[in-house]
Length: 136
Image 1 (tube, rainbow, N blue to C red):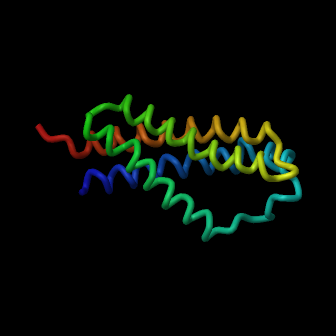
Image 2: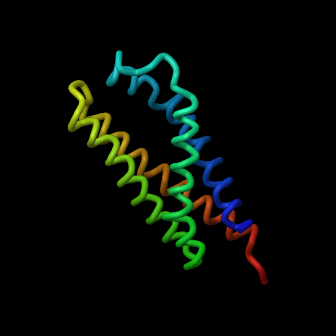
Image 3: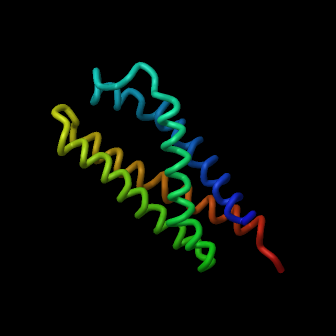
């Protein structure tokens, strides 16, 4: 159980730090330029927290846990990237399909970002959990 708590904590830390940098520094202007008036002045914090708690649990369940069982960082990276791709694609392509002013470029960028971020976070969660709980 400790292994999975370490995996969750590490995955959460890596995901949150990198995503915060992305959203506040790197892509902030991009999203403002592309989405304009549909963006809130400030995010709805309870909804953001709920997303992170649930999504990181998904990363651990679908990517980190299988990687720990197979002792393979490649599985963590691959399953994480795929989980990110499918989750972000579901959100972004649904928005593109149903919202009048949702730009395709946002969907493409966001899907690429989710794929990268989730894969890296899963690999980090695996690596630290394995490192700290390895016996022998």
